[in-house]
Amino acid sequence: PATTSASTCVPDPITITALDSQGQPLTTYTDTIALSTSSGHGNWSIDQGQGILTPGPADSGTADYTFSSADQGTVILYLADTHADDLTITATDLVAGVTGTSSAIAFRDNAFVFTPENPPADGPDVVVAGRPETIGVAMIDRDPTTGTLWTRARL
Image 1 (cartoon, rainbow, N blue to C red):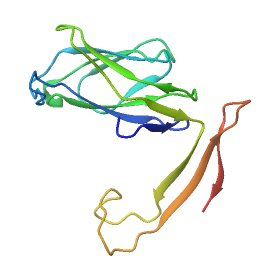
Image 2 (image 1 turned 135 degrees about the vertical axis):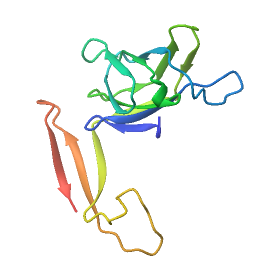
Image 3 (image 1 turned 45 degrees about the horizontal axis):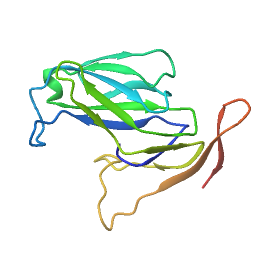
Image 4 (image 1 turned 60 degrees about the horizontal axis):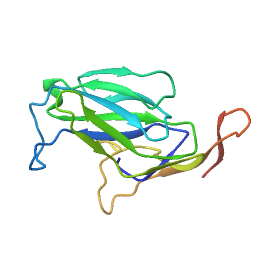
């Protein structure tokens, strides 16, 4: 995971890279991996990947992903977890049987979300020192009774 904390309100991007025995990326990797979460919660979707994602049952935390040669051994998937829990992710190569497990990710029911208000022409992800940027901040929360997402405050 990119961070060790995530929100139950938005999917968390998870980068998975196939590595060789020396820890180097396997850019020609095209096998299938099985994904699971230690909590047994979550739904997987593709963010950046050309392969085939086969989700498991709803909110099971499971899925299979078959890498495409266009992935060059790396895929970014989203994990959405509507439960406030701590979990790890395990990826298992279904051919070689090699397994890797992530560090713990803490999903919580509220989060601050920062959004560029007027993104510059070169894109919202390009940060330039000294250039003024207008950033919106919102507190996103989940109603414990209905599960509905709502914005508590927007600055």
